[in-house]
Image (cartoon, rainbow, N blue to C red; front, side, top):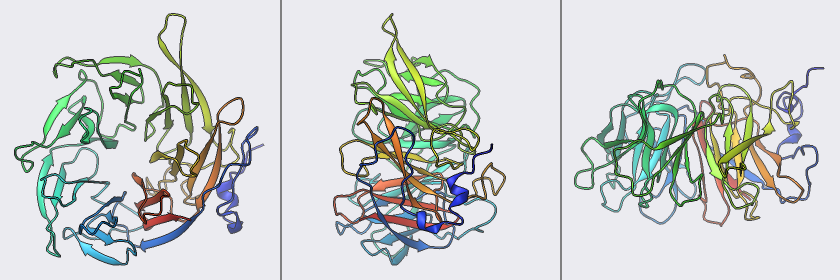
Length: 400
């Protein structure tokens, strides 16, 4: 018998918002987070949104596409560049990811914009006023549908992590002149990665304190005292066919980092890979399902298009949880489950039993995610909030 997903059921049961659906064997006494939904726009500007302090008033603001929204109310909109909104039901924005940093060291947060895979990245220099921001070329082509702005070098500053011309690596601005093309540092040999490759991450797999490079087909081990030229050692393992948001985190609390990822950014599946060692002392992984397909799943909650996956402690128990959702209309209605509700979901990590389990909490059924979701305390109350932008608009979900 075909299972009817809760996502479809919710079309007829709106009261299920913020309800939890326990998977078999799960404890049901976890502290459940609740959120207030704030819709900043109904317009489609971008596939992601981020957080920074753009007017240097000490209060977090939100950026989505060509606009930033002044916190803490997020009702006042300011233009970064002369951009436009896009149709909510077709096509794509020219803005997929927004990353925030002070690239020129003037004390003001700037914004790095990554567009469609394989296209150039630019950063916009904060004008410090209502004047439009100056646009600077950063990098010629950011390949991968899930790049990252993460600290892979361990220097405390994030780098643009992606693949380029068939090699994995990272790009970073010049300290002398950040307005020049960013420096590219490859870490792998050339392979046949196309621009639309799905899935990428950074994390310490071998426990040596150095960040490794994660892809769906394995992990690349960062060497000690790397000379900057020799490729990192590849450890082949199939984390996913091609998901998004690959993370390294000790889910089961046994002292080593496991790997969390969606299986396919345009279909179904969410898993974690438990790290252990074989008799030879080599790192191995065992896959565990968190959410499957409508035909077979350990979770009663099922939805597709998990194109953005992030981790944070969402209920204050000291353990990171998984935040994800449907990338609404990611292929304009052509993906499996595309017409199901646009869910935003927190999977609470539960270590109380003999094995790690996950308790899904539906945050919202009419927003979902884009290619990027950002987790941050935007109202400065000590709890983690959720920021997203996609074809349904721009949203912040404030933890209550």
